[in-house]
Every structure is written in structure tokens, then in C-alpha cells.
Length: 182
Image 1: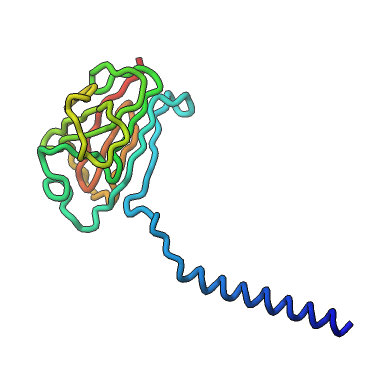
Image 2: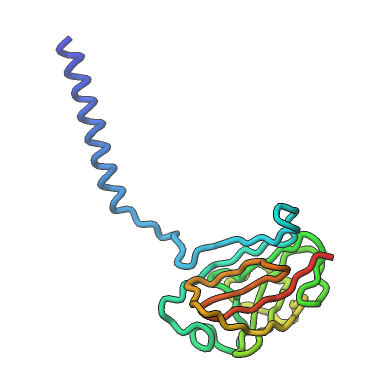
């Protein structure tokens, strides 16, 4: 009996001791995979709960008290439209993208921001890191979008679908590209 109690006590202390060590180890674990610009997905649906027409996967960089357009994102240069990998947009059916016909499929989304207008481009070369390997000859569609000012600053770059438009917004800048399923 004493031997059984001794074993139970030893097991309890040993397991409890391991749990204490594990708790201390957890405090020291580093998570290098945590993104500084979190990934997000936005969907365009037909109606409120209808089928998905488009999906965009992108990274959302933070403003962090920086000058964004004309600063961090220079005017007149191709931008990956977010952070990390180039933004990817998938159309599940043929669409009119800013008045241009685009076939169903997946595309990299690039923009050329300027002060008053942005050029929004769909490119067939997917899975690029940033815009470093951007090849204009692989553009499938280009359209222009007028810059609109927002009253309040938006901390994270954001893409949403609203009222038949793909809206790109960050800081106090917003552009909208009409998208309509064919």
C-alpha cells in the first residue's frame, strides 16, 4: 500500500513538474510565421447569400503612421496591391471588369496608383512575390479607377465588394472598380 501511494505521489509530482516546465517553455516560444500583414479573403456574391462570383486573396499591410500613397507606395509605379505575394483574384464566371470582358479564372491583381486615377490590372502570371517579376505583356485587362478621398483613415489596406464594385481602400484613399457577372 505504501509503495502504491509512493508511486502515485511520484507520478503526480513528475507530471505536475512537466506541466510547469511546459508552461515555462510556452512563454519562450517564438512564432516567426505570424504575418506582419495578415492575409484576408473577400467574396463577391450574387445577392446576399447567392453563389460566389469572385474571390480575392490578399495581404493587409498596416499604415503605422506612414505616408502611404506617394510615399510607401510610389505614384506611377506598379504595386502588388497589398503586401507579400501579389494579390490574387478569381472569377467563377465570365465578368465585365471595369467595362472590360474577362474570362472566368484566376489572375494576379496589380495597380498603378496616381494622385487622381489608378490603373487596375489583371495579369495571368500568378504566384508572384510582390511585383518584382511583373510582366506587362501578361496583362489580361486594364481599367482606370478614380481616386476618392475618405473622411477617416483606414489603418489596414482593405478590399471589399460592395454595390457591384471591388473597392480598394487604405489610409484616406479609395478606388472602386465595377464588376458585373455576364
